[in-house]
Length: 355
Image (cartoon, rainbow, N blue to C red; front, side, top):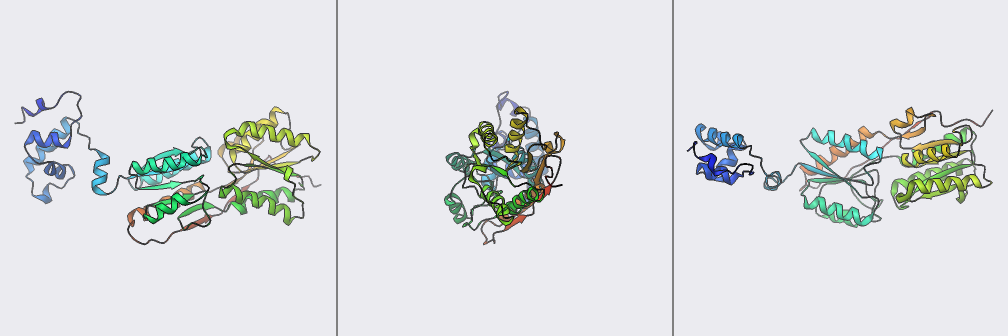
């Protein structure tokens, strides 16, 4: 028998469980039990196990992971949806989440929504069709309808960075309001009063709104009047052009701004680029501070002051909660809301106006 079975398999053809079973004149169930190390406990002879394993190895049998996952009820994959994976914040977070998931034997599928509502909805459906065991999402949606449906199904998911105030769901993020307040308050303590903010669309995103509120409340607490002209909303799909236009408009005005606060690292990078093109020295003429600290900020000259987020802890908490949801999907597991502190890191890009 062993001399003849190789003729059953065409060169280069991917063999299946059924091929192995047919070649040995045994059932697919028997082959599956052997390949899943359950031969002994099911009374399958050592010789039969040897022959099954020999064929599987000789013809490089690869199991259909999706089919296997469906049989077992798990595919050991998780979907991760973010606005833009090219953003350093999200790419680093993705790597940390991937490493954390690997500890549990899980793989990660990453998708970018590009801050488009319809694309995110399609990505969620795409990942559901791939039978991922759960989702980690930094959502761009303007309502929680889709996530309400997932919750009703007891489908495992964790929201990160952004949340829906009226949705009872697992969430891991930082204290955006406090971090933003710290940044602007620091500028005020250094004597800055004309502080512009570069925010970003879509305006309904919770993290952006919380950072905006921190900016306005810091000014209000210091008795500094707010000026809508100093609030610049940059479109997500044209950050470079939007930042360039906004800064030129700010400089053309009679506001004499002394500092700019940006609500994320992408805005800060383009802001720095525009100021250099215009030969506006940082911080000698304009101080700059950003939310989202990245390694680049520490090495550029001048180094950029920023609000740092504990990415390792965000990844750890998100995966921990998701694993709990996956392993207790049919149970009534209480939802967790984890808010982590943000840290202000002052570097060379801010200067004091006080003597």
